[in-house]
Amino acid sequence: MDHSFLSALILLLLVLDPLGSLPIFIPIMRAVPKERRTRVAVREVGIAFCVLFAFMFVGDSFLQVMHLSERSLEVAGGVILMIIAIRMIFGSSGESAYGLESGKEPLIFPLAVPLLAGPSAMATVLLLASRQPDRIYEWIGALSTAMLISGLTLVMADRIRKLLGDSVVSAIEKLMGLVLTAIAVEMVLAGLKRYFIGGL
Image (cartoon, rainbow, N blue to C red):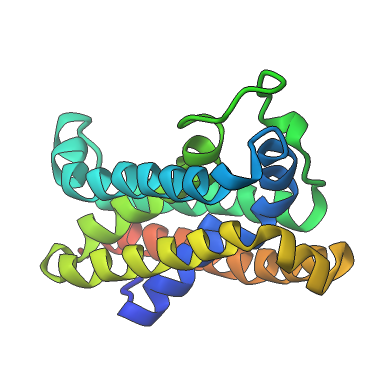
């Protein structure tokens, strides 16, 4: 399943799911003083970007060391995305999934990792870079744009929730989950097709 810059950007946005992160992000940030919330959000997004950026460049080496083929990675990535999509559609978000000590400012966990740079995001950037390494600059651009959009969404979290309301945010997340389900199925089918046909 080859991607363009736009399709990679949309895929990354679906995987990062900034709107779906709001129900977790907002309660966690309540313990942070208002004057520091923007700084903390930017810091956590920056850390998540660095983690995913690193995964782009260790992708080939990781596959070689682990003796994994691109086809197995594509199928595995599709399965992970499918699980995330099902949780987006049927699951309920909450801060209980990412326990944080009361009154403690988040650092890396749980906002940067695993809320933003989680297993699905890591698998996605790894797959993009390993499938089409000659277009690495496009993937870096797509990742940078997706993280910028996610960062702006988190910085404006309270305003977005007040403007749209919980029900609209939830509906958008479920719609994104449906789209992500189709992408996950396509990734699995593409990996299986390459496996059985034997092509690259």
